[in-house]
Structure formats: C-alpha cells, structure tokens
Image (cartoon, rainbow, N blue to C red):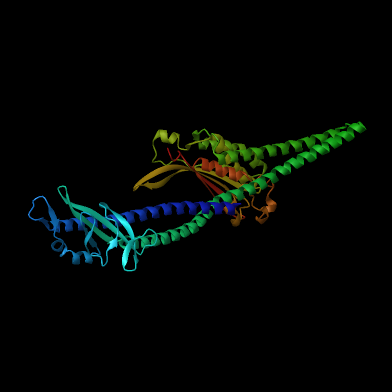
Length: 478
C-alpha cells in the first residue's frame, strides 16, 4: 500500500514538473525564435533603406514628371557589400519584370509588396530555382518594397536572406532544450521518488505506531474483560448450584462478595484504561479544551504529596517535598507571592505529578526514599542579538528504587511500554508489582508538551531514577 502511494506521489511530482518544464522550454523556444526572425527582418529593412537611398533616379527624355532608375549606377556599389552579409537583392520593373539580381540564377517567385517579411521555400530543379510547397532545398526570408515618386511606381526592390540563420540556431536550441528537459525530468523523477519516500516515512511510522497501539490496547482491554466474564460465569454457576441445593450459608455469601469485589476492581481498571486512551486520543487530535489559569505549583505539589503519603507509609518509604526559596536579591512582593505560580491546568498538572510520584513509590523498595524538589530558574535565549530571560519552574522527582535499564530509556515514554523488571537489581525487595497499563508516562509527556515544557529522565540500575520536568511560567506566545 505504501509503495503504491509512494509511486503515485513520485509520478505526480514527475508529471507536474515535466509539464512545467515543457511549457517553460516552449516559451523559451518561441521567444528566441521570434527574436531571431525580428533581427533578420530588421536587417532586411535596413538594407532596403540603404539601397533605396543609393538609387540613382533620372528624368525620362527631360520630362519633369517621368522618372526612371539608372540600374547600373544604382546597384554597382551594392553587390559586394550585400554578398558579405549573405543578402541578395532583386530589382523589378513596375510591371514585375526582373531587371537586376545578385542571385546566380533568377528565382521564379511572384512579386508583391511586403515590408513585414515572409518566408518562402524554393528548390533547385536543373539550373533554375522554382517555388515549392513540399520539398525545399532552400528557405529564404524576404522583404519587398515598392519604390515610387509621387504616384509613379519606379519598380520593386526585394531583399532576401537565407533562412538557415534562423532555422539552424532554432534547431540547436530545440535540441538543447529537449536534452535539458529530459535530464531535468529524470532528475525530478529520482528526487520525487526520494522525497516521496521521505514524505511517507512519518506516515509509515504513524501507521506502525497505530498498529502497535491498536494491538496493545486490544491486549490490555482483553485481559480485564476476560477476567470479568470468568468471574461472572463462576458466580452464576455457583448461584445456580446453590439455588438447586437451597443452600445460602455464610461461606457462599462470602464467596459471592469476593467475586463481586474482583469484578469491581477489574471494572475500575478497565474504566481507567479507557479514560487514559480517551485522554491521549483527544490530545493527539487537538480537540481537548483545556482551560489555563494561574496555578500555584507549590500548593499543587503539597496536595499531591499529601495524597501519596498513605501509600508511602504502607511501603515504609520516606516521601518528602522541598521548595527552594527565592534568592535574597528578589524583593518585589508581587513576584515573591507568585514565585511558584504558572499558567496551566490544575487538573492535568496534578495528574502529571501523581503519575510520576506514584511510579517512584511503586518501584522503590521498603526503606527507600522519594524526594520531590521544586525550584525556579531563569533560562537565557537570544533574539536578534538581544538577550532575554524567561522564568521556568523545575520539578525533580528522585527515588532510590530499582532503576531503569539504559536500553529502555529511549522507549520509556512510548504508549503501553513497560521496561522489563527482570533486568533490575533487588527485584525481590519490591513489595508491589507494577500492574499499570503502560500509559502513565505517555500521559505525563502529553501533559508536559501541552504546557510547552520538557520532561527528562536519568536513571541508574540499582540506584534509582530521577524525572526532571521543566515548565515555563507563561506560554511562549505570551
């Protein structure tokens, strides 16, 4: 499927580029060809003007109103100069009779006045040139001008130029453009294939992640559903047996109660999993409507730590919160009152740090410690050569737990990923086995990114793990 899509993308890239290059090459060819034709026509018109100025006009038998052209005197000095420019001149009488020409042999082309220039085809048949419309041995560009004084027509002057001065460079240009266009199309085809592959990489990656996500979600949902079905079937079976035996003693009631508690726990677990999936889906689609307001992070952490103290006492883990006081140089009362305040969503931030502290307690053995530290730092960045300071809040959640293997750190925030606890040291000291769905850290990362912050992890197997969350006081666009 992806290869077919890639081929279609590459084909579209190549086709569109080929059409654009073809239009561009056609435009260049037509422009250059018309420029060459205009240059030849300008040359012919210039020769016509020069020759007409050199014509020797005489009166006929002394009459004032009749004139004629002295052909010998008029064209004697023009023959050599026009041959150097590959230009031929013909002079015709007022009746169209050829009187003088620089062609070696006369050409049989009808005479008519045309100062705009025209192209004619002639071919050599025997010893004479005749006009041909099919097979051409020679192409000429001609300009014909009628020479007159007053109303008297003295004759016609026709100037011819070889057409190969236009056709030869035009053919060479066409060949060059065709070759260049072909090479460009091949290059674009290769680049299109390469770029389409690059464009398909995130799509393929997203598709693979979606497949993995679907498989993992199906697995996570299948387990509690199967357990719920099993417990319900057992309960119904026992109920039917007891009804038949008409026995409803205390042991049977206790058995029903235990099965219902198991079903309740599995239902809660299933509901939490569905809520987590719904949260991530909304974050990915961008349809979540989060209300950001001023949020005192110190008060939030105090509340979260207080909630987790019960679990910490049960596991005999020392859970502490440390707030780094502002420097003595800061004396602004308004700033001091809001030293640990940021613009964020209270509920999501509480969920973020509940996940992090809960994970730290879950993977820390009895007698260990979990430390939460909150401090405010200044980050420096430059814009157009100017330095700016932006305040950030940094929260560190450190534990003395089993640690995370180095090879598992890059995938730690992937959905449904759980590091293999068998690789950790002192696994026997863990009193509570991790039973999460593997979405906690993925949700934590989504919340941090929503607040335009960063989350990092440092861990050493057997010594503990530290999560570092950095959150801006205000959003970047503010």
